[in-house]
Image (cartoon, rainbow, N blue to C red):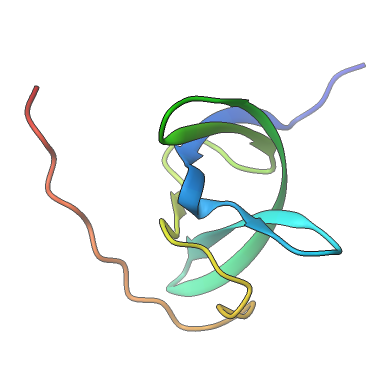
Length: 83
């Protein structure tokens, strides 16, 4: 069986859990879009998610069900850290 879902890693704080669903909030066209995900392997600060996401999608770092579907969002990009 083939699935179009892809496994990606997001900050743990991006995951929103309610009694009805588990999701992350993707920013698309400047608006919040709830995307249902399944949780996978967790690391210290990150967690693998499986759902309708692809590499390069912008997700809200501090997800909350108070950020309603369709809410206007202005992305704030953190500067890249050197290693």
